[in-house]
Image: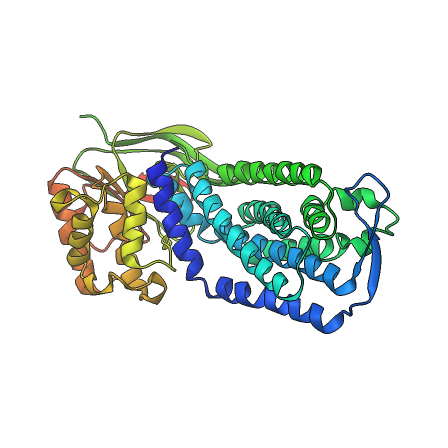
Length: 254
Length: 207
């Protein structure tokens, strides 16, 4: 891998993203809209739930609104990063293949896209953490922020993979919205999974580990090492899958 | 004479559909070969097989020069400007920006001027007309001074004046020893070509 090539592709990838009107609009609208909905629909009534990643039977009693603010932050990060990552690998796929014909390798192009995604994850994580702080100060804010970034990492890699698999926008967006809606926007809400009949599925969905990092950090002093490791492994596997599919789709005869 | 490109008994199938059947031809240094054929006759498939975007189902393709490929579709980045597209492809070719006439920026200036679209240098590609986009598409194929130019419908969308500029430039490159493989659904002036082939139902014949 040649760093000069990756740097050039990264610069262009960032410019492309910044000039995408829909990306900028979504970046501004989704977190604001999600937080507005939570503020309009929740109360300060106390709720009780159990943290799934903490081994002992420990119930947490918090304000409904505070729980929802953390949960919806995770949902906003997951939805935004997966959609923007989808754009990175799906848009201009044929032009990317032409670049490979001209001398790039698929791994250099994917690395540049991953670097762009990493910047996005940090940006979105910071933005949503600031919004969260306007309404509620979690117990361990830096670790809640880490959970947001891990949600971005896992869902961003999922978006890269879906973008590499599907050529048409509609299928890609459908799969992004479908999973994000079911997983990070519904099943990972502790209020739901605390009483779920079957948690096996919930524990194997992409947002499980990042959600546990943020929830555990926001409302308890328990260790987040296990869900942190789980998030990194899950995201790493999705990134590997994205790399394999991207490399296969971009292959040329040398 | 060593050929720049040789196709030997090339076949290409997509599932049961045989698009190319036992295609053989070659192009020597400084030669210009044209391939004509109806829509759907397999011309673009043949070019994609030559440049490496597709692998032949049978036979072999030997290329002995750097290729400059101009695809039929505008495979450029439409949210980037013309200049940024030049920069991106220059990076892909491994060209340095460097000072003076050696860097890609001098080459960019030359091509912008040669094809008459210097004033669009800082305009996003999405705002360009079809003809100007095609000028960029073509310029990106010749940016690194390739020895073999593989051009798929290279002058589609050009006005008459640009069409003539294109042929003037092609003649200069040819005189400098560059080889050409040009595909079109029709070739206006066959006298410019050293060889013209016709592709019909996957079979290549001398026209």
